[in-house]
Amino acid sequence: MILTTTPTIEGHTIEQYHGIVIGEAVMGANVFKDFFASIRDIVGGRSGAYEDELTKARKMAFSELEQEARNMGANAVVGIDIDYEVMGDKGSMLMVSISGTAVRAAGL
Image (cartoon, rainbow, N blue to C red; front, side):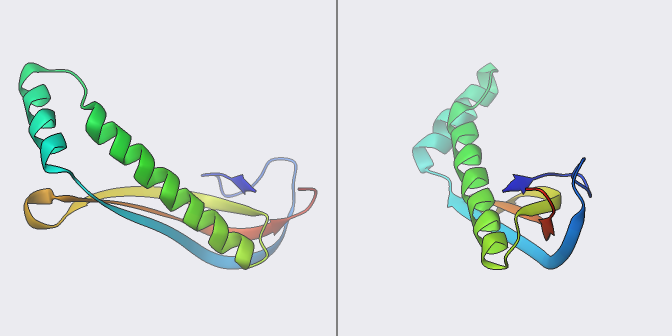
């Protein structure tokens, strides 16, 4: 399955458009991770705990997007857009939303 942010796939003709597909993942932020991340923010540096949660959420959302596209008979998703949102009380939840257009491309 080809996943791309571009509207086309170089060297391949899109034969059929199946429609929009979406993958979403909502993750709760752990209280201890929040505490250590806030300390790291004060002293500087990157927050590994949040980066790990972002990576997990993004992988889950991509997996959901890809499965939805396969279920429609697609072999690629073009025009992918990735959005991140903080939700919930005091920003306690993280949402990753990925959308694109499921297509059937020749030669894949």
